[in-house]
Length: 293
Image (cartoon, helix red, strand yellow):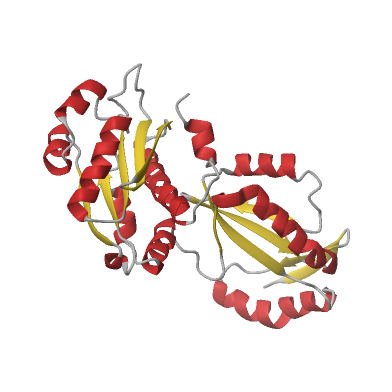
């Protein structure tokens, strides 16, 4: 039910598609036949990295511009994902294996703090990385959300052990609840609107006061598809993050479909806190590209 032929120097194996019919043939015939032809010194050295805030095209452009002489003996691959992108370096030759450490170091320098972690086994979520860092430093975090509807809190509490760092969060979708629960002033809401730097700062401070946490993520935006205006189009969002005595803010324009917008913004909030925890001084690519001019 299977056969092999060679055409123009290429071995072609034709097998049944039914798994139980394939297994014996694959184990006893095909794999041993292939193994006879492989070099005895074949190397399969794979390194994987988690990256956030860079798309495949942006990442490839950075590498092309900053590392134009990338060696053919090291295969560079990307595995797209939302929110994390996987970058994979593969070598199958001794030459590639020998020079890989040098080029790996160069790649780390290009990607900088966009790298979340080197993947050793099972990839961890962005939220898990943050919770581990908070736990190590015995710190707590709180959230104040509007347009993300509790998604930041959901990402954190999805991870086991979250209770050690996360005790409370606030989803204040209406202006009334922003005032009642987080002490956002009506003056700020009337003068600047719910989607503003002034309001997310007050949301952040209110959440910190109520929860006694060390760090905060506050977010307010226009997820769409309606609700936008000329001054504040759909995709407008303000974030505040950090500690009470060192709050930072940024306004971004990210016009994505509602569900993608919410998920991306929630993870941006997590990433901004991650960068605070590692004392990053590098501006994320998403801020360079999407910050209000």
